[in-house]
Length: 356
Length: 87
Image (cartoon, rainbow over all chains, first blue to last red; front, side):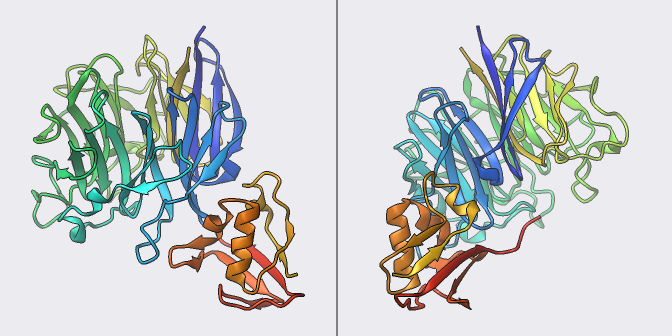
């Protein structure tokens, strides 16, 4: 029998929700990770480990690891540094297991790699050696490497996303990186079509098609059919071009979800106070709004970039958390929603895990 | 030997680590090195790049604000205190 877990990162620690088989009832454990602010949690099926990345205002950045489904944790930041002469790293924004290694995206933007289960880390220097780096500028959340997308079979290939710099890709295991932002608008910049400087908020890979991507950007939703070399705006039909999260279906490469938010200079909350999840079934050619079970008035909440997760069951479960600490879930691919938990701290990250 | 008093939020990250330690050290930097031997990783929690004491960690030696270079005497008492910060 399958068992579902939800891993939730908040401003006041991590939480683990244990679900029943139907994903309707959930019991909460937490706060975990000693109440540290946790941006992102990920499940590594190869070692059955939970990784959590975050940073304490007192004690700096760290990646936590649990090998017993969140009951106990260890942590480390050994090697998670740009050196004594480099910029200080306040926090980890993303942890992603891939091909036996763990990758961490940090602030200020950079990528680290651990080959020993998070015990020690080394800087993937090639990313910050990109010639555009002197011009990198932070978004409102900081200069952050917030998304890491490994190729499913080729360990030499990886995509990462930095706000407000854009998408980069490597095809040589991180030695060299290429900016891949062509076609993505920098609507806030004097030059709206720079090589870098786009504010990507979330990047996801389409199921079974490792050259097909979607991204929610500050300036719209985009798709790419060639590994990010060229992007196409697919925002038409959405209530707003702005949002943070994006989810991809685990089996259907044409299905994905976004949660549009109000204009970035007008609150970045549910438009008109009505919370809705928008789904495409045709790769972004069209969108349909679903709000059944979500508050449709006076809900001026945000949803941060790592706070949506998609599980791999059939029908697919989707879960997202709000800036006001409510965790919502859908077990019918986003058509209807219910509250998993309320009154949590502001939610930064959500991950859905299915244990066989 | 100097005595180091550690905050609850720090020792909770290191199961079994004591709140109060006696360390053989002639400076705050050496005391933190000794703490890292008792609880591997504690140095990274207290020090940032530089190395420097993390911005929101306050260290006092015998009641006076201290730096990594502050000398310790055999009877010194070192307080490590998280800043009153955050929300």
